[in-house]
Length: 130
Image (cartoon, rainbow, N blue to C red; front, top):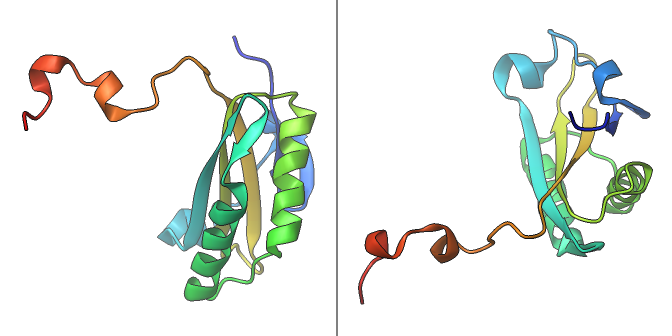
């Protein structure tokens, strides 16, 4: 079994098994939310700032009040640090919440040896020919 992870949920860093989202949360009820994923590879983030800027733009488009890019960046880095991760998939989710927006940041350990390109995962017999 994998070790318990620390996540950021609604303003607190908590063990993932203690994180909860209300069944009345608009993100849960109506998919009234935005999210972004990012990659941590060998201790370095892949274009984290660009991912978080796109996340902020999505929140503005949906008119969901979001923390600043700087604050979300700080939270993402804290989640990674608290979980001692070097290779991970990061997910940042912002729901409209029940009475105010809810920010959830999770990180899952990733296998650094996993193929990154689609061609590496597609058998040669199924690849498109030029």
